[in-house]
Image (cartoon, rainbow, N blue to C red; front, side):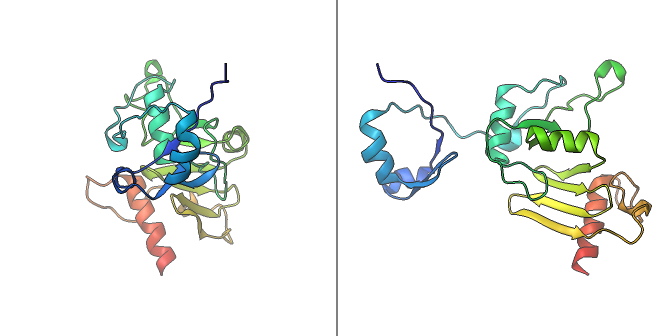
Length: 205
């Protein structure tokens, strides 16, 4: 007669093998393996799911996002990727970093993939869509953001880093994430990857 609830607990195989360590309880934080065993263990039934191959998720052509991709995205990028955001809920939107274009309108295949998705709260999703923010994902899980006035931010698993403050001339074409890079690289390197390299090099300098 007890109510049924779902708790997402992430535990490493090394912790299970050792019999001690830390478990990550989604939306709550870390708990000890002893707490999981002694407090939750006698009262709960557990479903153990295998580790997902986050890098091997096949993309799909549809705009709708299948459950397997949603789960992989949450495990790879559990937090809102908007600059300085902190939300880690599973109820965020999965935004297409590069806007989705239907195949019948000339869109390429495989647009819905872990390399072109990022979690955003509904508010940040609307901010990106309607207020002039630009984003790019040069590498899966790494996001570049350009604010409407030209400031550039990098967000990844370590948090947010401001790459460049608001420039003196916001209309400088170099500040546009869609602009071509200043030099030509190998054909195997994408334009966004070269632009990302330029930004990191400039920041380091």
